[in-house]
Length: 323
Image 1 (cartoon, rainbow, N blue to C red):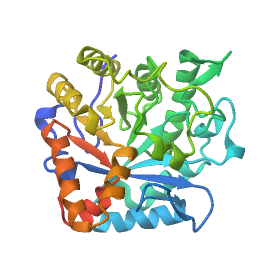
Image 2 (tube, rainbow, N blue to C red; image 1 turned 45 degrees about the horizontal axis):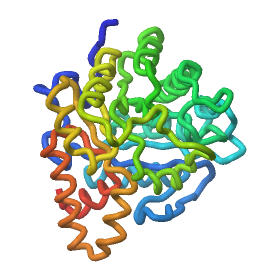
Image 3 (cartoon, rainbow, N blue to C red; image 1 turned 180 degrees about the vertical axis):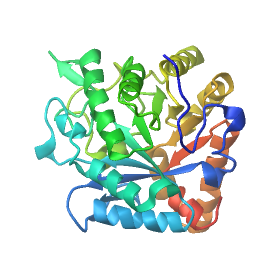
Image 4 (cartoon, one colour; image 1 turned 135 degrees about the vertical axis):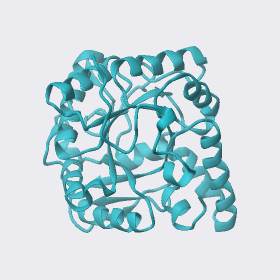
């Protein structure tokens, strides 16, 4: 399959990368969108990060844009009544995430880059990233559903659909679906190297996505695995048509970030995950101390080769002029 360049802020050639000239330009702010109006609910364990309804979130992103934050990753948080065994609501164009993306693109157009999380964990009753048959996560049926979700996000106007599930073959399937629909300006960011980490706890509370049984070790990577698996996964996603490769988590895997960024010809992103953020926020209640820690952390990602840094620290780091 021919891989066509996306018409967006990032390019395929890392030598000509427009994005990522500095730490500030590299940062992406994550958001959690819920249904309703006027909702602005503090997330336990993640000071400064809230679940927000579409109206509040759009105002928040407008404020973020005014201080120079142009790139945003949006996670949809669904209520229990919208969850089922197959995660069908995640592909519903009327869900809060899709509605918010449409409103953001109508309001801001190309002033912002909108990235959306395409996964099943927030929309399935069991909280897993894939569909389950006879107590086992099944790959191919999960990929079919992920394609539907990704098409819904692209139709809503997402600049990048972010595949965070780690199912085999989902990049190829989503890319093929985009090509068949003529969606050549919608990019694919794949979580290529995502570990079954213990650092995701606060996020799972925020997104209401914790699995009701078992864990995700069947499809996420073993934290003890060597570089060979990370490079294999990254190169596979490149061949299948991914525009950007994600390493997740960040701090425990700086060495992996360095290895991948030095061996693939794609922009590489890193996710400074919720557990990493919460440790800093709990320890560094003094702003000056937090300033030093955040600058040190973000600098380590850049030094290790990250072109793009998804971090909950983005708003404070940019707003206070730390980066």
